Length: 66
Image 1 (cartoon, rainbow, N blue to C red):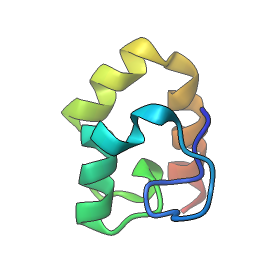
Image 2 (image 1 turned 30 degrees about the horizontal axis):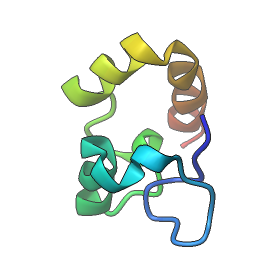
Image 3 (image 1 turned 60 degrees about the vertical axis):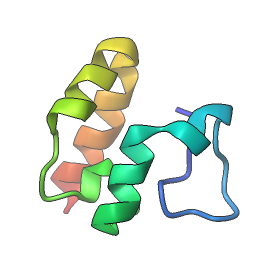
Image 4 (image 1 turned 180 degrees about the vertical axis):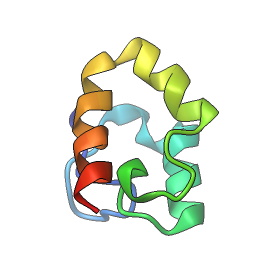
């Protein structure tokens, strides 16, 4: 993943961030990334994992560290 979290203003973001539903959701929930969300792993995120399976491992690690 090429991302430093949904609330990062100065960090790395991919070109799709401006239209990403998952980012909008993260900003709305006020979380640094989906691994911090109380609704982890929601339906939107589960669909994303189908496209980017490596993201699940990263975010599962964040979730388990909390």
